[in-house]
Image (cartoon, rainbow, N blue to C red; front, side):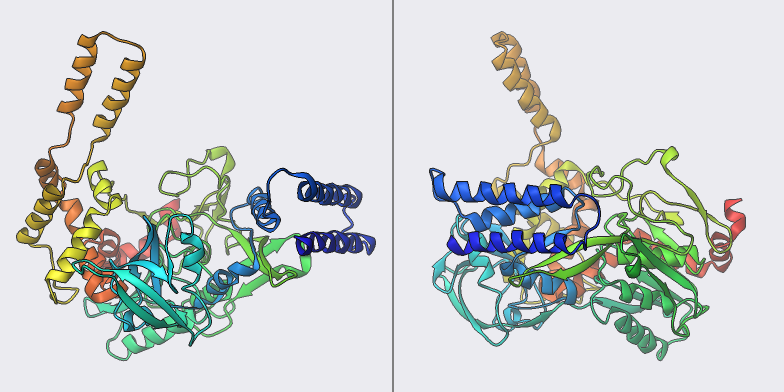
Length: 554
């Protein structure tokens, strides 16, 4: 506690020294110093007189995060115990076991394992539940603290106990942590024997070079007649990697992006510095509402320079630049320092990032708040919220029934059962959900007596509660109950009705157990409307050229 108060005092004195040197000459120095003095006094009073013990350090960390959240969603404070998260964010690497886990009742559920990771080598399986780490049993109260024990220095050991499907006793494993690095490219292949397809999942160190290598490798096997770069679901990452990726396709010296913020010396303009690897090969970029930041720089620059066709859904709309700054006591801050602008001069930052659609996409933007810009050939493009594709493909909307099968882990749990009953399956591009597998899934849900309610059933239930609260007659309440029962889901009917939605999701889940994330990507490609449209556009050179011509927007 004493150390905490000393730490706060140091912060306060440091700020005063900063102000005394007039580094921040904005006229508010006195008010800011006064506020910190008051804050210091509040902390002192709480420490001395508050009735209960208070974790001051935790309180300050939480208040710091809350303070930054008022600015924008991307300015984040990293306390010392979260530096591993910061390292992963910037490099894509961390010391750990190489698995994705989610909280479950008194356990951690493994939902994904990276191929050849320590978790994979030790024999852990998706569907396993970690119940103890280093002999500390996981409870709902300590689950966040215990989870951090899985990360640590490479070459160090961690002991875990797991609960596995079909095994009556807990299994014990000793895992040697390694430096875990997530692949920038989970999958690439040649489509139709002439189109290069590359799925880029993140913009970590080396992303551009990874793409370059993959394209050269495919080029050595076939004469490529088109490139499809898949940025769907890619949240972004390093700005320089985005610039280097665009540079593979545009003329040397082309403007790609420039940043502008409060500190003039930090403003930068980025141009293509190398001769392009593919200056003329037709190019398609796939994006969706989860394509953000660096993904939007790539898609936006390619669109503004009329270098390729963008297909999918409007992108996320993150046009803010962050820089990481070292703070005292091994802490850091990731702070928004500028906005970025793509070649046409537009900024793709969503005007209001606090109000989005349910799926995270940009909400409706009034025409009065949108400005018009022009691409290199004169096509009209607009700012105000993400990159609007040249060809928009509407997403299929999942039924409430299908969503519940996902959210209540019915598909996940059946996949676990299937995995232990089948030692192997066909390759990822051949395996499919047969009638027998789908019927087994239906029977599994029936036997488990999994409750799935329609939205109408839920609303009728709310009506019933209100009717009882308002003391309606027994006759009316009886009628509402009858209505609710008639709205109850017929499981078999819905399994047949939504089979076309459920089968691809189930197929992807099963393939992922045997062929990891790469298999999931391959599975998704079978039902991929955007990818099919990309191949059609690359086949139709006349339509491809027309989309990129100014005549389209006149």
